[in-house]
Amino acid sequence: MTKRKKLLLIIIPLCLLALCAAGLGIYYANWGSVSIDRTDMMAAGRFNGMPYRIYMPQGEGPFPLVLYLHGAGERGDNNRAQTKKNSVMQTLLSEENLEKYPCIVLAPQCPKNGWWDAEVLMDLLGAKILAAHQVDFKRIYITGLSMGGFGTWNMLGEYPNYFAAAVPVCGGGDTDSVPLFKHIPIWAFHGTLDTVVFPSGSRDMVTALARAGARDVHYTEYPDLAHNSWDRAYREPGLFPWMFAQVREAQIN
Image 1 (cartoon, rainbow, N blue to C red):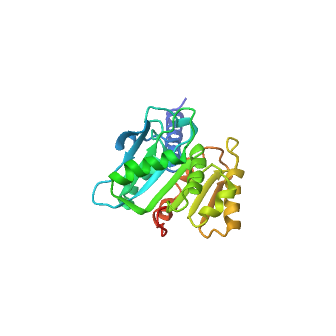
Image 2 (cartoon, one colour; image 1 turned 180 degrees about the vertical axis):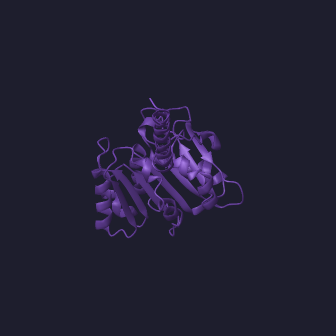
Image 3 (cartoon, rainbow, N blue to C red; image 1 turned 90 degrees about the vertical axis):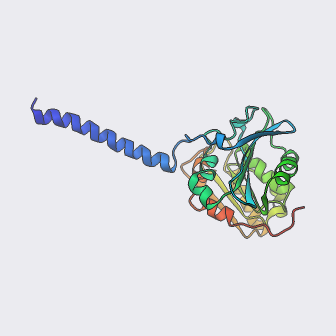
């Protein structure tokens, strides 16, 4: 074998490895698997036995608040699973995002085998968070995925004059409750290939909102994604600029 052939046998695999590495870098930078743990940026607390994590920005408030509801797989009592290597935390708590949108992020953890309870969540917000921190009461937002997507829709129905905007991901809800919160700006997400929570869960709610006369409703359905549509949803370039621009006009009931 000539020296040239030997050299090519070395160079070609190296080039292929470099191309693969570059491709993976682009993939992870955009839609890749969740790999950054921002849990330790958030203080740990408990309220009536419910674990929660909270991030408080530096500087003077008032700050907008984002309530995040995790999915069924993160239930428990360790006060880490709901934020560990989580796509919404990576984007919300990224240096770039916090520079643009400094905000309080509240992430409670639902008990094992439990379900999101709207009254318990509101008690947590009212008694501990809103009373203790500088919160912009007109800019309280809610988002959640899977079980948390259901929880988000339910919170809107239970407290229709509380939130400035909502981002339910791969969830569903009671279409009969839609007229109560048709005034709230909503951006819903789902994956067409989702067989854990069928996309009809989001489609039906969005259709009901349209029929009720809602004026600010966005729906994004990813034709190539299954249940984990949240990784891409929380990286949508326009999502957080849209959400943080929303301001609630009605008084909190």
